[in-house]
Amino acid sequence: MSIILMCAAMPVFSQMHHNPALGIAFSENHGQFPAHVEAITPFAAGYIYLESDGLTIKVYDKDQVQANHTLREKPFGDHSLQWDVYRMNLVDAQVPDVAAYNTLSWTTNFFLGDDESKWRGNIPVHGGIRYNSIYPGIDIDFTGEYNNFKYTV
Image (cartoon, rainbow, N blue to C red; front, side, top):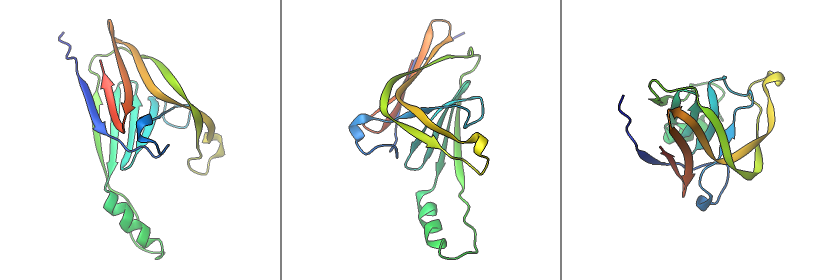
């Protein structure tokens, strides 16, 4: 088996705070998302989902969002968003031992849908998530600084 070590960065503009020097923030899954989602971070054009077997990046067209805001004054019409989805799979990886670190001073709330049993409040927010032993002797850190999402192996 060959292992490729890499570091990646992509611009992320988190909606969770206003100081870009703080980086991005991850909210843990406390039952507000499907079980395979470990954590999530929003950015200006979508979301990054850290999952037990990789990560998913969902991106929408910001111009389409702006156009939908003007449609709100009209009760009829297509208000849907088209998403582009990018997936990174961790092939043949072990189920990770997930550890959040750098806990931040605020929490988030998720009131998704009208089923109150799925609502979650006061979810801790972290500056980093580590997947320990994803491969033998290999960990992955998911972090961010200056609005760049990074993962390092």
